[in-house]
Amino acid sequence: MPTWWEHLIHVATGRSRRHVDLPDLRHLPTRRVALERTHYVVNDPERHHRRQRLYVLRHETDRRSRRAARVAVFSNGRDVGYLPSRVAATVAPHLDTLGGAAVVNGAGPATDSIRLRVDLPTDAAMAEFIGTHVQNEEKRMSRITWQGLETASTETCEIHFSGHSMVANGDIDTPDGRLAYRVETDAAGLFRLADLAIGGRTLSLSFSDGRWLVNGEHRGDLDGATEIDISATPLANTLPIRRLDLPIGQSADIDTAWIAVPALTVVRDPQRYTRVGERQWRYESRDSDFRALLTVDDDGLVLDYPGLFRSIS
Image (cartoon, rainbow, N blue to C red; front, side):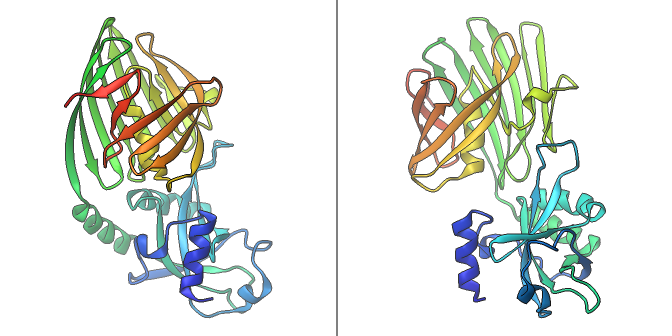
């Protein structure tokens, strides 16, 4: 199959970004690993072809169970198998650092097998590649001040960006006291940690492998959510906007762990984001009639949230 056709299939199906946009690991020293669960999704011509081929590795989170996240292998726009679990456990963190996916070489099955194979970089080669990759990532810092229009609040927030990841520290003066918070994402831009404090109350929230912990306790009712939302700040809107990076005209449904301020209670909240322009996103609540048109900057930070927040510096 021509490379341009593979690119088109991957983009059309949404399975992966174009190969040229992904970290390319094909030049690294490798070890060959047989895939699991290739029996039913791979056709006979592909299974019997033993020439070298291009694969895309993607770290997938299984939100339906407590199992460790899986690493799927894609070819021609569809998944053709998974790395063995013990191998995936070491590869998945590396993929997270690289943004969640990477390109590798692979091959058809050995003569006495039906399992496709993939050429994985050695641990030493992967560590060296990631070290160079992280050093070369663009790192920058932004400061923004928001004025709350509904609650008469004032917030200052400092955000550190490194590739797709971000760490934000904010202080909000509200009628109920000062809220201090810290929010972190991983290298793929997916929410990982948040700490909040106001009026003697504190909240610690974390998300990993599809499981949510609230103050150290697993909250099964939140499993399946992928983002957070904080009632007192538009900073949380930046996370799905940056992570989804939708083409203009497309929408995505998400579930969030919604944090009420000042109570610091957490509930699941279904939402929808639609990109309507280069810097405009429509936010909709999926369990009420609330919607708003957000204007953002190049980093996805909210400049105008009609009726609720606006940037003043």
